[in-house]
Image (cartoon, rainbow, N blue to C red):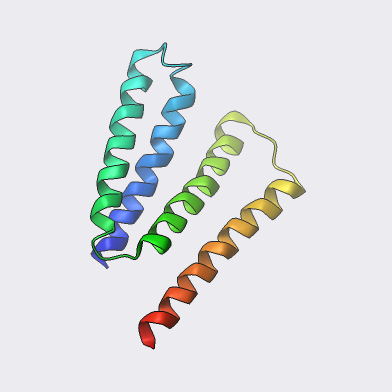
Length: 111
């Protein structure tokens, strides 16, 4: 369970760092640029702690998939990025893939 807490912290800090990346305007604005470094640092550190107990394939799939979905949501809500049928299908496929990987790993653990 502890590994999943670290994974959640890693995902949230990665999304915050990515958001700061946009605000940094090509690393020309100092505060968001520092936020990028701190956010990604926390993200990778927590991801490494997560990997002590969570399988690599599952952890990375969840980290990248959920991070991508949350980043898309931030883009839509904060910056007015376009949300259309293609976006909805893409998000659904990402979530479906993460669910399938998680289910597959649970089957392996019970065998």
